[in-house]
Image (cartoon, rainbow, N blue to C red):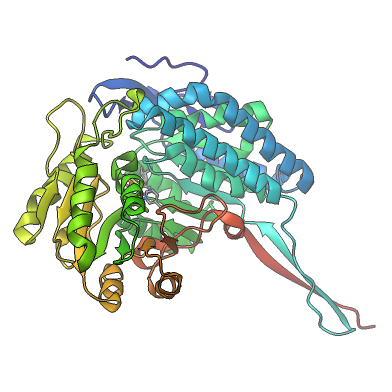
Length: 483
Ligand code: NAD
């Protein structure tokens, strides 16, 4: 073990207390850059879940957050933001080690998490209902009430910032939250519990439990005591959760996978496009739900674009996140096996390997930055999410063909357009089947811009003002004034 575990790190955060797992059970945590086990995390079981549910129920019943004056709740959110910034120095190396990502990106997750609490803190006292005119005999108004207990299942690719993405609006709206952390990299996320303690969040309002998804996660989402499910993760898991949710008719928010396409026209700025490819598919080794995993290029620019992105991929040096390597590992051996198997099968369906094409010959779970050219839009590699550093490039002749290919998967998370023609960009933004469209810069936007999918990419929106309204429900009050 080379991570120092102290002050609750490595344990579950159960309504303000740091607790071990059931019968001392623990889950090993690996460094994906070396394959070594670096720490252990307490594995929560049925008893801890029951205790978290009971605490959350008490918090909702007492109105720990909902009965607080909204301005005081806003202040509390901002104090949490400050406490998250204060733990970033400690948390970033832990997140870097357990996830394999660059140290600067790990630090960026804490900064983003803090920014979510600032942003939703600013909205906590602005959740306003409306008055509806029904004539002189009535007064009618709407209230936004918190949903109650929000059960949130977090994936491993951005555990700290994605947890905050849902925690911040849920708490700002006055709910209690139970988080199920990702079993592959749960350590840094648990540290958020310390920020909550230091900021003075009512103890019972949040629990962060770690456990196996198909056990603890499945039990949490099947509970009749929760009032909402917020899930970020893969399509098969999302489908399993929706089946469980149907049993109790539990409202759900689904942020699932993607196979998002950038469309580059003949007038695209090639340098800007290459920069967007760097961030779009190679950031975090491509383990980003909104990654640019497909690039459609007009025939006239195609050869130059393939050459430029292959040169980019070939030039990315692999290494440990602590050394700020340009290219970092994927999260696990299983993930690497799956990515490599799909890439090795792609030439059999017509693709040409323009860069990379297999795992790197070194310790840890490194897939070579890979560019597949001439990819058939209907082939497996163009249809299935890999969640790795692999870009599929396909030529097109006409705008209509590009839109058809871009829209031709079962997903619809994000899309991109690269052109100098504003009218064309605007036209395509309307036609692309996606929850978010980037023009000339992949990942343009931020925590203030609504994010979410269409089709098997899920439903509901996170981020922005809109997301706050996932965490409240509308109640209409109609008062008769008749004598
Ligand atoms: P996953 O679905 O395997 O796991 C996600 C989380 O669900 C983990 O915490 C896991 O423990 C839990 N889980 C697993 N089975 C469960 C069950 N039956 N009931 C309840 N919880 C269960 O996904 P992953 O491999 O961790 O993440 C990668 C996937 O997530 C990719 O498909 C990616 O596109 C998607 N993702 C989407 C977004 C988004 O915002 N749209 C963000 C990040 C990741």
